[in-house]
Length: 143
Image (cartoon, rainbow, N blue to C red):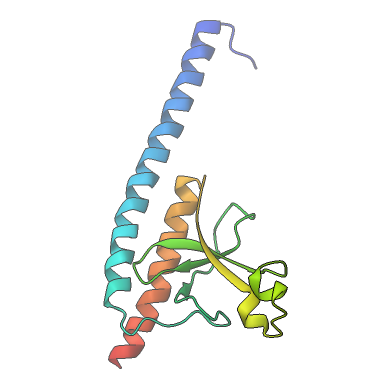
């Protein structure tokens, strides 16, 4: 059944948008708080582990469980406690390749990219998952 009063429908739409905005602000604030805890925990984790399979990158893998954005790649916690996407590639046209380097390690490129345009909910989820992963490693160090 439709609402016969267009003003009432407009007010309802405005209230709906306001609730969504407030929820997003709450999630964003929570994400910032958990990210601060993650930075603190990462700075305690010494020695900081190398990322498995990477040659030049230190990092703790963050499970993507609960993340809505399925387009993000491998997210890690850095030594400083930041969340970054680890991007691996091979530079087969760079100096090492031109000089005929047969060593694939010399042609490997490991880049830590900023996580851009994540929703507040995904930021919070990744921060919580990252904190969980770092906490497990901290607990292992103390046992």
